[in-house]
Structure formats: C-alpha cells, structure tokens
Image 1: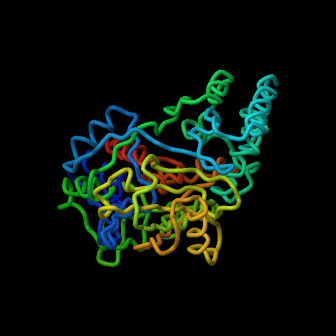
Image 2: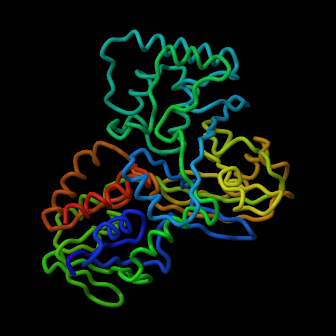
Length: 418
C-alpha cells in the first residue's frame, strides 16, 4: 500500500478523500470520527462537547459542503461570558456593558495604562495578558478563565499558539463595548456550520461514505516498525511507503520502534476534559449557544446549549446543556453534583427534578499545553518522523491547539504532497 492512514477522524478522512486511491485508513473504533462522534440518549443527541465547524478558508468550506449530504446550517454565533452575576457579550474585552461600574473602571483604566507602555514584555501567556489587555481584564476574566481551562501556570505557557484564538482589542473597541449593542462578531468563530440533525457525526458519516471501502474499522494498531515501514495491528500487517498518523502523538511514539523522539514525547503535556451532557424539561435559555464561566464558584469553564444550535436534536419542549471541566491527573470526585448545583445557581436549571437525561464524556488530553518544552522538542520529534516518511497531523497527531477545519486542511496538505 502506498499510503497508510491511522485514524478516521476529520484529518484522516479528508486525506483519504483527497488521495482517492492507493491508501488504507485504519481506525481502532467501530465507528469513524474519533471525538467527533455524536451519542443519542433518551431522545437527545450529544456531541463530545461543542463541535462546531468554523470554516474560514473558502477551499475548505467548499470541500465540506460538497462532501456533505446532511443539511448543514450556517449559524451566527451567540456567545457570552457569565461573571459578576450577569451575562455579557463575547469577546469579554470589548463587551463590558452590563458589568458593575467598578469592574468596567478596572478594565478600562488597566487597558489604558498598559497601552502607554512601549515595547512591553510578552515572554509568556500571563505576561501577554497583562501587557496586552491590562490588569483589570486580566483579573476579571482572562487569568481566572484560562487558569480553569489549562490547569497549568500561565506564566509557564508560551504565546505562539494565540493567533486567532485570543482576540486583541483597541481603546475605541473597549469604549464602544461599555455601551449597549457592542461588537460581537469578533474572532475566528463569529459564524459556524452545524448539521440540522444527527450531531457533528452526520458530517463524519458523509465523509466516511466517500472512502468506506478503504477503511478498516475496529482494528487497533499495536506496533509501527519504522525501519521495515510496516504497520502491525491486532488483525494483520501492512507495508507502506508513507504513513499518515492522526492518533495521539504520545501514544503513537510509544508503539513506534527505532525513534529517538519517543523519550521526548513522554514529557509533552496536555489538559483533559470531563464533559457532562444534561437533557432537561424546558427550553431556556433561548438566545445562547455557549457561555464562558471564569469564576471559581463554578467548577466548569464553559457551558453550551445544543437545543439552540440544532433544535431537532432534542425532544419537544426540552433543552440540553453541556458543561466542561478541565483537569490534569486523576479525575476529581463529585463533579456531577458540583456541575448541577452550578447550573442551578446560574438559572439554567430550575432544580434537579427537571433533569431527564445525563451522559458523561471524558476527553483525554483534550488541550495541548504550549510550554517551552513543547516549543523546543516538538520540532525535533516531527523532523525525525518526516525523515522516516511519517506525517503526523491533526489536533493530537500534530500535538497542537487547532480546529476541525485545521484538521481537514492538514489532511488536504499531506494528500497533495503525495
């Protein structure tokens, strides 16, 4: 076989569709998709947290639409922040209307002070926050929120990953954001696509249909012989010329023989996520897709509302919410109770009796941590793999913070190099 692809998520399937022939995809699960699957329980369709297709690149947008038979709706984002007991628009830094006066003053004066500093230091993420947005915004949102999300010291994280994911701002935007109807279409995810029914897996199913004859499901890769260019699974052996990997890079390096980078990969870091999906009686809230929650009183860092994205994915007169909790190490105990009480405190759930369905999900190493070790060692690992005709792509294969669109784009790129 000319090309073997490990993993039938968006990156692997996109690469296969582009290659068209002389390739084989090996997927350990019995369904394609990786974490872009959708589960149905009690009439509710739940994703593994919010999986929304933010398509900025016209080529990728065209590819997705042409290869999807499901009804994909383009939706304008309605994202919020919940802090100080109120909902404000996203991004936080340019949507202060509704916050207490003293909080607005802290945010505004802090930004003005930092904007007067010439050539501010931005050697780590915390420093970037303070010297780009100011002490007020850092204190009231950016530091507490990102501390909840990353579970890692912000002053030990680098800044090269920020890009489109963390919007910057100007004094004019902040001043306008103190008034009603501030700008809310900032950021890479101002609009997104999502299937009308079936959850995000509806798109995966359409992609899979294009290449299903060249996909082996339920087959686990147990060893990679990089010298003999052989993939060994629990069901057979396959010789390749080029290997495209989309599985977790750390897991891949454990089973690949003859790679010096295996020792380096062990120290790569990431944060895991516990996601609790809840289906409940009632349709509130009706105006929100997701909400960022920075304060320590709430165990989750974000909640989202699938019924506002795809109403047909929930029973009539019902709503659905997902709540995400980040952690490193062992899974904390008592999370379901803390999540439920937090949702009640925010007014999302009236009480526990309205709950119809619960479905917990675990996303191992969901968010790659960008520290100095990764910055130095990851290029060494990738260079060694490339020298062995192995291309490691996708969020986990490339060990990066990226979107589904990025995964598809990387699948394109490696296929075009063949």
